[in-house]
Image 1: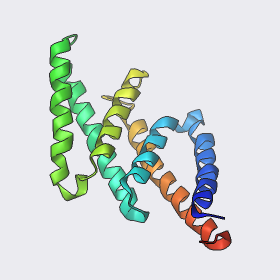
Image 2 (image 1 turned 120 degrees about the horizontal axis):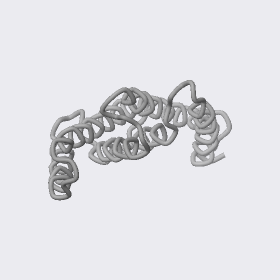
Image 3 (image 1 turned 30 degrees about the vertical axis):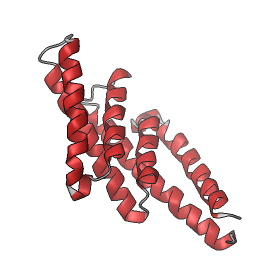
Image 4 (image 1 turned 135 degrees about the vertical axis):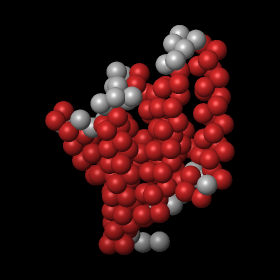
Length: 162
């Protein structure tokens, strides 16, 4: 078993479990936002808790950027020019924030930002009571990625060969 096969096996198992758990209405989770958090982990190239930390910090910073843009844009609703200006400002700040050590992963910030906009466009009130659904789904996604990564390493150690 190659490392890639082992990782795919672990990822398939845990993503299937996530798909099942996140589809339970009583939990209020958003499946695709969890997958976005999982993607941030794998995309950052870090493993273990360092990858989890990077995924969480980056997606949360992007989420905050989107919330800020939505809040400020609410003062001038319907203005395409103002919305475009806010898009430029938050895009720039998500790049500039990478000077801070914990916020180095720019793609994760964009993942968090567009996922928050996506949640709003699907009808979640992210500026109100639905924000915890987004946050918890991102956090679950980072943990999902750790489970996928760790289980893949375990399968390779147990059954793999170089």
